[in-house]
Structures are given as C-alpha cells and as structure tokens.
Length: 235
Ligand code: HEM
Image 1 (tube, helix red, strand yellow):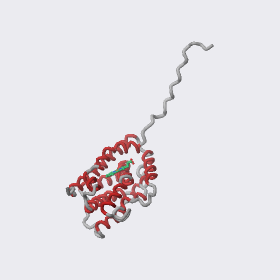
Image 2 (cartoon, rainbow, N blue to C red):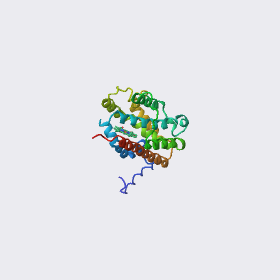
Image 3 (cartoon, helix red, strand yellow):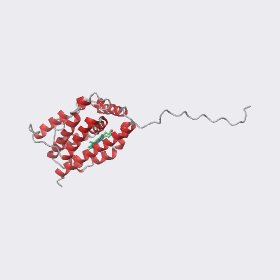
Image 4 (cartoon, rainbow, N blue to C red):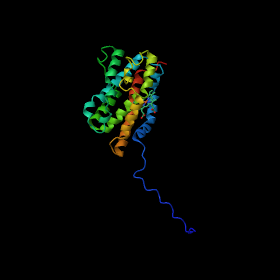
C-alpha cells in the first residue's frame, strides 16, 4: 500500500536560457506600422494613385527618388565589408540605373539639366549619406524602409502608374518598380527579414535602428508634403 504522505510537487521547469524574443524584422515592421499607414494615406500619394494628378507630378516624385537612391547606392563600395550594413547591399536591389531610364523617358535626354531636389528630399538624402558615413545601423534602417517597401507596396504603385498614365507594362517610366534580377520577391523578402533578425548588434542599438526607421518614414512624409504643395489636387 502506498504511503499517504503527500506526493512531492513536480519540479519546476528549468529556467530557459533566455525568454523568447520577437524577431527583429517583426519588431521593426510593427513599430513603423503607424507611419506606414500615414505614408500610404498622405494626400500626395492618395491623389497620385487615385489618378488625380498628371505625369508631371509622377515625374517630380521620381526625380526625388533619384536623389534618395543615389545617396543609398553611391556608398555601396564603402559599406560592402561592414559587418552590419554589408550583407544588405545586394546588386539586384540597385535602382539608380532604372530611375535614370525612367527619368529619360519622362523628361527626355536632358532630364538631369538643372534638376534640384526639394528641400525635404535634400534633407532626406543628407541623412542617408550621414548614416552611411558614420552609422551602419542607421543606414540599415534607411535601406529597409526603402527597399522592402519597393518590393511590397511599390508593386501596387507600378500597376497604378501603368494604368493611369499608359506606361508599357514593366517598361520605361516604371522600371524603378521592376526588380528584374529578383524573380521571387517573396523569397527575397524572407531572406532579407532573416538578415534583419540576425543583425549583429545589441538590443539598445536595435532600438536605435527602429527609431531611425521611424525617422526615415517621417523624411518620406516630408517629401510627400512638399510634393503635395507643388501639386495640389486640381479639384
Ligand atoms: C501608397 C503607397 C504605399 C502602398 C500602397 C504600400 C503598400 C504596402 C504593402 C501592401 C506592403 C506589404 C505589407 C506586408 O507584406 O505585410 C508594404 C510593405 C512595406 N512598405 Fe509600403 N506602401 C506604400 C508606401 C510606402 C512608403 C512611402 C514607404 C516608405 C518609404 C513604405 C515602406 C514599406 C516597408 C518598409 C514595407 C515592408 C514591411 C515589412 O514587411 O517589414 N511603403 N507596403
């Protein structure tokens, strides 16, 4: 017969080495969700994608992108060996050449003559260049904000631009949105998120990267505001 003494309680679960943490790619996406919604709903974007603005507005927007992508891509060689930023610098993402083809289509061969950035665009490009020079984690924040966006919502913008202004499908005018060397964007984004998850920095630095991502969204918002002032919806 069993003794009636109370059974010893089951041993507590051994403490886990570390509490499960949210992957960094989820943290950065979640943290910038609100800013993303604001960017999507900015009046310039809504007017542009709603078909209320003409090709000149689309061209001016594309010009701004050219300044930003030059800042992102001019530094590729300098950052290639950097352990934090280097792994993100994939040649198949490069957009400057595509933007230049689009701009030649939109503005003719002299599209570059006298071209100046809007003040908000100059500030944005300066910030990207500063990060590239001094802070690889900050550069990653800008890289993520632009390229992962282009691979996602950019495809919606391309479809609308083709329909609204009659550009050839995936042709001149919308080449910026066509990643010819990325046949499977979903798989590419999965790998990109895995790289974010493996970012070799501590938690404090990750928080700073998230803050810089929010800043990147604000910088985009400022460009939209200035474009909106230049191209108010002709109601
Ligand atoms: C009308 C304009 C826009 C539309 C329609 C749009 C739409 C989308 C969509 C559908 C996704 C995919 C969401 C998912 O996979 O869960 C996405 C992701 C993203 N968008 Fe946008 N977007 C727009 C503007 C922007 C702007 C201006 C930026 C920043 C410059 C941006 C940055 C991003 C980023 C970084 C992601 C990736 C989020 C992640 O998976 O980590 N988007 N966008």
